[in-house]
Length: 353
Image (cartoon, rainbow, N blue to C red):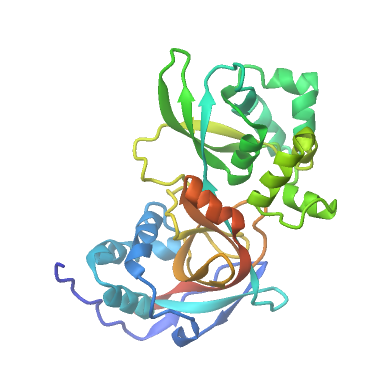
């Protein structure tokens, strides 16, 4: 490996002012309080830090030359640089709760048709004309049920179909995950793979269909595998279940020049499988490096991640949605991840003049 010069000696430091985060408390911590800090393979996280530098916040921009320089460094050099330039803070809720919830999401891949045809009759829509004006007014658009049943809603979306899926459950998966890839059969019979990304929502509140099933006493396992098992035995209730979530997502189609690249999160940079998380931006600013600890039945995680996305269900200080990657294997992992979480934010320190 090429030699990399060690970080320059740091002068006496003063802590950078903490961000305004109304939903979280930041408690200064020592590095030795971070479980597993010395064991993580930091080079695996460096891709997420490099992506971070494509749209860094003001507090992180000055660190980007070092991030790029240290991309060829070893773990020890990368760890020493982080410890010299950042201060860890234990994240707590406003009430002082340090334990929270980790879930996971992924980028699914589905077959689709550009034209409606037998077997492909569930549409994915681009935003309706005028939807942005509704959003700016603070009002909500039609609910999921109204979109699928009211003539005026269907008329507003006429001609806005991006593609058609075979299964309404697959469409719901895309609505919840926020993006995905489609293997689209075009009108001329050719097939190509494209990405559909979040473009807008109807601004209705998100309601978990898993929670609806639990509240109805219909399942004990509300993970995606459990939901799909219930649907397989109750196909006649598919629409009823889908309508339990009034939130509806509209998409935009994107080219896929690099299949190894993840979808863009709310920060505006491509997500890195295993190292990007969605957070509540009122608790953690986008671009913040985080030390994540989650010891659960699905995954044992003690690793450096970066806050690069958000979601309507991600609310609170110690709450994260872990990006598992693309495809079925990532989906199996994401669908079963629901476990305890602790997090520490790594916030820059400022050299004194």
